[in-house]
Image (cartoon, rainbow, N blue to C red; front, side):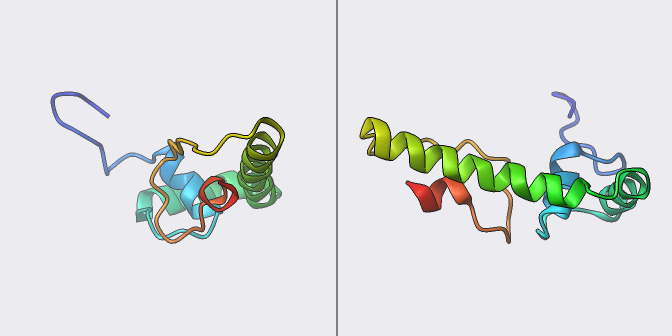
Length: 90
């Protein structure tokens, strides 16, 4: 992202690639192509992304229960089409 020109849609974004790995809809062809390239050499990337995502939800639930936290700020990457685990836990 460039402050002057805004986000770039002609180069892959790791956030949008992560969205792709999670089965979301907020990605472009350039992101899907790059993500598939990663999957060719690291086939478990989708599983790792999903487990990381689920861990964030478990960590939020633990913090809420253990420390009585009633509100949480979920500063996610705006993943559209993917259930947000932190929000579900809180």
